[in-house]
Image: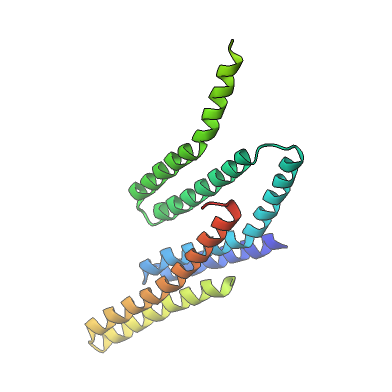
Length: 128
Length: 65
């Protein structure tokens, strides 16, 4: 079961971080980054499985591919932004974390722009 | 790929801490700081390689080009 593996890895990393925290605080951040990345890599193939099912369903319902790929891009951008912001906040740099989150939000808005435009056009066409 | 990387980084951290205090006993203060720096650099190399792998995987899964 993956969940046991993941929880075990997380606990081991937390214990090692406490051990190393007194002498070498700079290694602590790298340990937490490494643990976070490894846990996410373990989950990544599950996520790609879910996305392939969603993609297959959307093809069957012949939804336009633009919407699905935009949603995927937004999820990816949001996740990476959140990942970086959380790590910076762990390291105590909440100012940097706030900047990363701001950048992530703006990038998501840019990604969503085509859909917003398409939506508004369809609404305008409805109004006689 | 899994747990051993976490152990490796923690091991390097502990070894550099021990080396630092030993070298400080011998009175070689500047050498102690250099070994600490080297330890941190090695950890950084491994973590950056891991981050590169993560970003490449996320790029392929989420079609972020």
